[in-house]
Length: 339
Image (tube, rainbow, N blue to C red; front, side, top):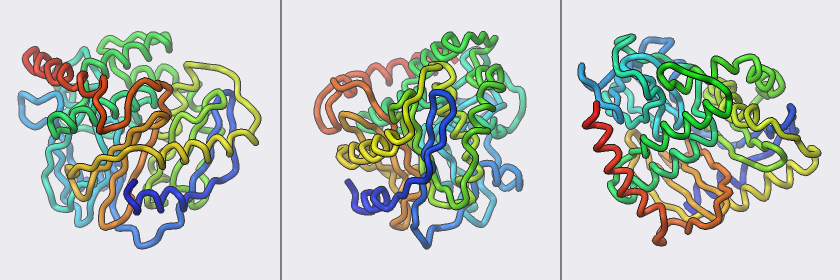
């Protein structure tokens, strides 16, 4: 693993375990200094320095146009959802948009049944894709990078995963919108967000559901993480709410968290040029998959997810991932032709 990322992971400190029903959360703290300043999606949209639109009047499902007029970069997080325009989308990877720039950003559709304008510009939907769907999307994006050097997801799988999540949650949506599931389950999700308040200096979270680590997110700046905290909690809580199992004793959680980071450190690594600033690192191992954005020698954002599938080989070895990449490209072509 790249030294700067390994050192960053080893420097992470655990806070006190918080718990609600079948979900436990460990606040993460990373004592790293001299981090480049940037705005979050929420900040930039609120200030009016960021606009995100369709790439043209006709639009393109896997791409949007982001215009950053600010004097500093803007951070867009993998899985953050944008609502409006012709259909809702999520970011396929974390991007640090350059200041004073126009960038074509890779996205996935999260609203299968709509392809008509509601607004000219996108807004922050205040939702991050649910953890299971996000983890599956991340794996297909890595496959696309290997086969095509593009940050494309398997759009068909994304739609299937959202439909499955909707069925499990007992929610029907006229347009198959992921956000409709969040809105329908708002009261239940609010119980989780109240149970996991933001801690002073917090930069990330590590989450366990039914006693098993399912993933983590860490952001380099404290104010940036504060903007993302509630959205990230809901992203993980959606799975916990649907699964509705039992939790285990809190003292087991810290050991599970340490074991998870050991698994992360053993992941195979690939790196690609990011859409914005920096390098996009992709990780895959027997027990975890993830990504990290590094720029100017600093980790800006990283996310890792537990994988319970042991049959898939690490990157660099032939396996079902490479075979699925060809199917992904064909399905994306079919989608573009239908639109």
